[in-house]
Length: 288
Image (tube, rainbow, N blue to C red; front, side):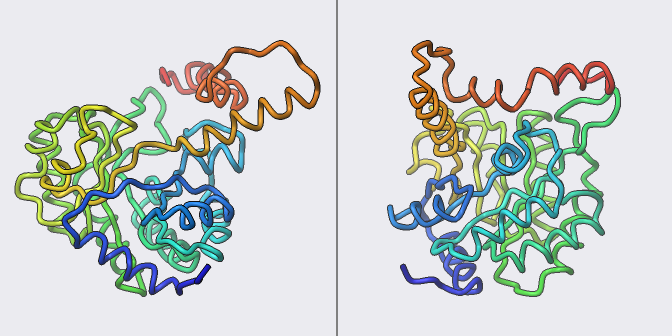
């Protein structure tokens, strides 16, 4: 496999974002998965924060992973990746100054783009899992990210949760992030194509859509018409790897009794998700 430079991969992603086509990402979580995705012809990969939390800590996606741990995994992938990889950089691991460090580290790791979300992380005491920072703080983080970037081909994508706020607020936020210089807008929580159309109207930057397999967002032609260039259906490859590992080891130990759990349920069981939910209730007064 030809190993392109980090700059070449970023240039490739920029060209993909400029096309009038909606591409589906491959979930990549280690060097081998990145090579497999490229060999199968995927144009772009996604390194999810939730996947790194599971892969590195065996913990659910509740902002437990540190910047250093995330960067280490991104670096391992960036060393061999033959396709551009988008990194889910969560909230940038802190305030605007922390975002600057995050951009610098992930740029060196070799990612082609990163998403920065406006969720308030970690969840505050007596808070809500989808509580958002102010638009002004989100804009400040984007401006700081742009300042910290050395390679201008590294795409900085602003992410917001369209399902956690009224439509008018989603529109206000996405326009503010676009005006602040975001290279793209990432949306999660979009209900259907009509919801997306209302948000996308007036956006001139590419849209990255996290669908989680929502069938109402399965029409790639219509998504492309609405400005969506990247669609993320989730991290099925990682879930499949967990399920395969479980069944392989179960058979090796001649365990005839299967739990009957699907891949998502296996992840919840072995990441101690119930324990974390209980701790969130007991110590943070949060219904996680």
